[in-house]
Figure 1 (cartoon, rainbow, N blue to C red):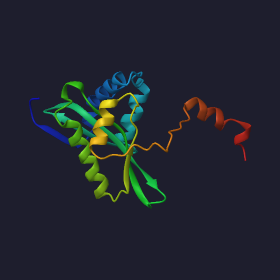
Figure 2: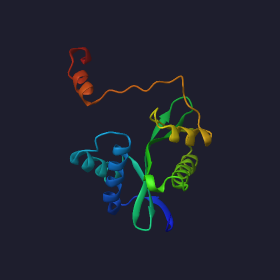
Figure 3: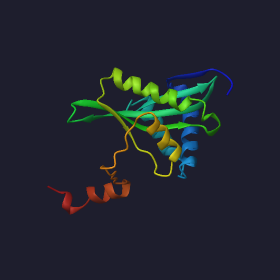
Length: 165
């Protein structure tokens, strides 16, 4: 790995590199990449609406990794939670500490912001990531299950008679 690694908050000029990394993550996860309209929305949500935060890791001018995150809240801890939506490192840059450096940057931010915890989800088949997190001291939450309403379900429920008060 040649060059100096830098990690910083992404700027609007980093949007193209970020979108490229996002497409690479979709390929890695065997998913369809974001549509053009989704790409426009996420760029606006990061840089205009400030709904989500984006750290970008670069080697020189090339974006090689990113972390996309936001804050939720723990009612029992009465503290914010840093929720890591995505962390991704290009394949050819894995194994050199880029992901760990990026992750620890988030850990430090969580501590600085007074977070009571940091959470994320990992695909069950991603054994390399699971080992990485366990090696750092993360705990797998076996007693919790993730639930999701997709766009179609949201629209169906929003328009249902059961939903009207």
